[in-house]
Image 1 (spheres, one colour):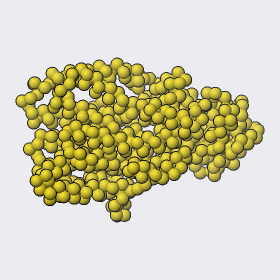
Image 2 (image 1 turned 60 degrees about the vertical axis):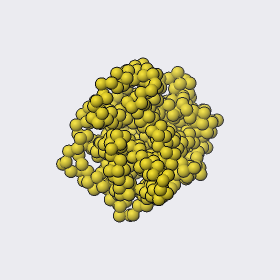
Image 3 (image 1 turned 45 degrees about the vertical axis):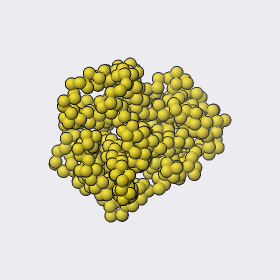
Image 4 (image 1 turned 30 degrees about the vertical axis):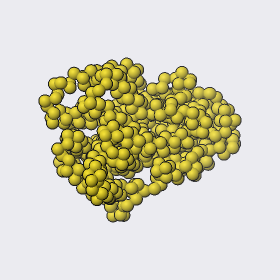
Length: 554
């Protein structure tokens, strides 16, 4: 019910509205359609030339979620990609909270304590922020299940190590096909926690190490066998990005972000929000807010139960995750200082250069949920003898979590869906797997990116030039001048096309094998149509609410 309340604005019109307010959700909708389409049409699921034709893209470097796409396939096929996306976002909160509850119950926390910890994790500022645009990061079922597996591997050791390693390997494979970054961050968090545990239990390392080694070996073999193909495409396949995909030390936790609420919180003074808006990154990544009451509660739990090994390991690992989240240089109130942080050394390790530090906060919130659950469980146990202790525990948790209450409902956006693309009769006139040029041109603009949803809604009937993806920079394209002209025209309405430029634009249309051109409704549709009429020397056909040039032959 909490998940539905958060997403209720999108559910008022689930076929055209979606949770979020940036372009990334529309890219995710394209991925939700691509995976089942590639499977049913015998295309490679890891690469595609249906976007950025003819060069295509390497999906392994993009945020596609093939596991979720296959699970949600029946809804995508019947109700469309927008509805499927909203279903996944809504379920993500509930599934994350439930997995955290499951892990805490496994750690023998009381039902009430597990419920409180599940709420903290499943509806944390990390989850609320990332729900604004990053489906692959809000599907956060993996961290709690990883905690469960690591605890069983290192502490309890009750099951066959080969079987446990197989299950751990399958879990990692599932997360690989959901979010490679959360998997990589999880490996870092697990290594840190096990290393810290080894420091506190040095006498037990020798006896437990063989079991741990067998589990890890089995997990590595399982993962290597199942991931050999996609990994080979990722690191040796076409259209790989060169260099770092995101600016360094930008998407980090500001020192003040731990105590200043953002626009995502229900209780957020305007002055605090103004400061938070000045932090580096963007609102979807400003996810480190804890609030002073929760910080006090966590500090009390660590002080009161420090002798418990679980608390020692959990608190130190959580502290390390928070430090990692702050990046390689300390940020204070939006300013980058010269103070170096440990991430400056870690980021030099392979693959970690592409990880965004602030996303370690998902593991911090999970570990914070463990500390809160320990505190509530212990105080509740005391409450069996003293009713006041239970009341104190309930009040402390309520006060600590109250500042984290999200602003309900979450922001929602509307995707423009012309009737032409939603009509199977009309869109079926486009030749199968031919190349279509749509205007506005799809290039990193929240309006123009809607063309990805149109293509997905058509069942991937056609290919497009342009798109929204991660790849080589500058991107490989056969239509650079046409893209520049259409992008400027779609954003400013200014047509700078001279008669001398028309022959070059015609050559680019021919190089891209454009068969159909579609101009959709918009503020500059008349000017876009005029440009194509001059290029093709003929008028368009009126098809429902769009203008179409069929059988383009330059």
